[in-house]
Image (cartoon, rainbow, N blue to C red):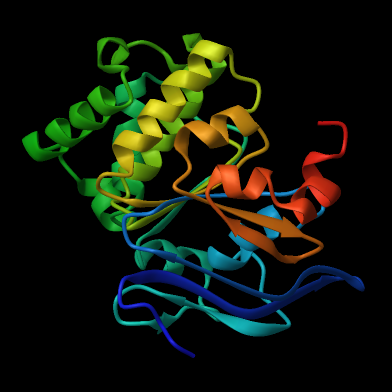
Amino acid sequence: MIMHEKTILYVENVTVSFDGFIALRDLNFYMNYGELRVVIGPNGAGKTTLLDVICGKVKPMKGRVIFGENDVNITGLKEHEIVKMRIGRKFQAPSVFTNLTLFENFELSLRKNKGVFSTLFMLKTDKDNEKIFSILETIGLAEKAHEKAGSLSHGEKQWVEIGMVIAQDPELLLIDEPVAGMSNKETEKTAELLQTIAKSHSILVIEHDMEFVRQIAHTVTVLHEGTVLCEGSMDEVQNDSRVIEKYLGRGK
C-alpha cells in the first residue's frame, strides 16, 4: 500500500455487512491533512457506515483504517480510544443540554475529556474560560454564552454541537449532514464556519444538499452501493456520466 506523505486517513479494503446486506464493499478511501472532503451518494450508499467504521462504532468484516502521521491501525479500537486518537464526530441530530447555558454545555464538554476524577475535582481555569469563549466566537454565538441552549434555533444548536467537537481538539472532524433542516441563511453560515475550521483541522462531511457541497468542498467523493463511484471537484463529479445515472439523475 502506498501512503501519501500527507495522508491523515486511509480506509483500506473495508467490507461491512449487516445481516447479509453489504453496506461497504472493499472500500478504499483516503484524505489528506488540512482537507475539507465531502462524501455524497444516494440513501444506502454507505456514507454513515463509513463514519461509523472510522470512529469505531462498527467493526468491519475485513479491511482496516489507518490514521495519523504515524500510520496507526485504529480498526480494533473502541470508540473512546479513537476519540483519544483525536478523531471527533458530530452526529446528525444535535444533543446539547437544553436546560444549561451554552457556556455550561462547553464546560461539561471540556470536563468529559479529562476523566472521572478530574471532572469531580476540577476547578475551572482561565485557560478553560479562554478556550470556551474562543470557540463561541468561532461559531458566532459568544453573545449568547449565558443563554439557555434550549432557546437556540436548530441551526445554532448544530453550531454548538460542532463547537463541542472542536473542544476535544480533534485532528479530524467527522460531520454528518450538518445543514439538514436549516434555513438558507443558516446553511450559508454553516458553510462559512466549516471553511474557517478547515484552516486548522481536517474535516470529512456527509451531505445531501448539493448547493452546500458546492460551497464547501475541495474534493467530493461519491459512494454507490458501498464503494467509491468517482471522486473529484464538484464540477467533475456533476458531469460524470456514472454519477448522473446513479445519483444526480434520480429526481434531482
